[in-house]
Length: 363
Image 1 (cartoon, rainbow, N blue to C red):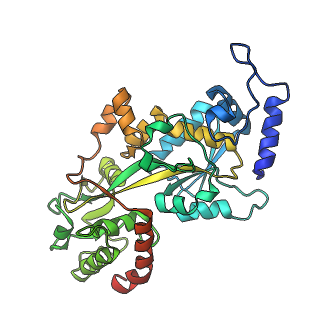
Image 2: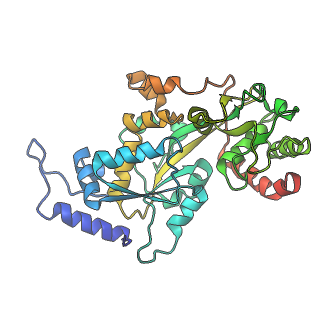
Image 3: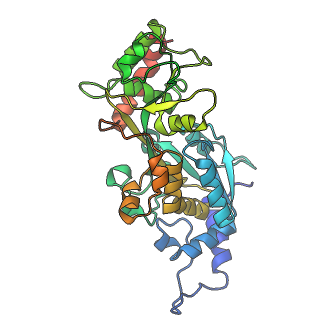
């Protein structure tokens, strides 16, 4: 695919749509020309039909960092492609949030693929907000204010809580982090907490206590877990996996040799939102905006729910009676304690500490 500049994409699309004059509404009034880089459906396209038409002319959407087994993104991508007849190119599904940003900043070589949209952790989104194009989806007002940038550069799509998946054939249900220090437990993190958001969340979940999240407390806990021999080595079978509930619930649903069950630590529960954003220099600006409209529609929000995630619009879906009750019933039972969400300064400070202390304390 030849990478187009934002200006070139606008000119090509404008010419294609406006060359024969602006279309008329049913009332006979002419609509303004399409602007694929507008900050809302009304400003740029006037109608959903015109947005769909513009996106189909582009023909492609490029995503990055979306594993197909992560919050049901495989079904979401396929549903979008089938519904609108748009090819979805999936770059580096295992890329973390920082790698997604790096993919957009890579030199624009001939034939290079540049992501149109992002799925990011909150701290990475805030740090790179200048790279994103403002766009208010039609369901903007359903997204709680605390979950969106007031300039509409990013907004939360779904959330998860840190949970414990345990093997009931080998250990008793752990009530909290203190139980995991007892004999018989072997605890796995889903990666290196300095590189993987899920593993970082596990350390920070263990860090919760008096005074809020304390990275040094989380690192010290895992140091102790290793000293007592309960921290599983990479590749070794564990009796407990510390991970986001949507991933642990998927583990349990798959079945297999390990009959996983999922619980939340009673000590405290850590939550996190993943946010959506449009690349300011998206090669396919209309398709990027259509993707956002789809992700925040009732259909896709329920598909997130089917993937065991908590959609950002869940309260609106409940109020309007459009929530997939069957999918909601399959979520792990709600945490007993109110989830804690890290602020961006807390996350930044904690990551700095982990880079300095993790290897020394845990290895």
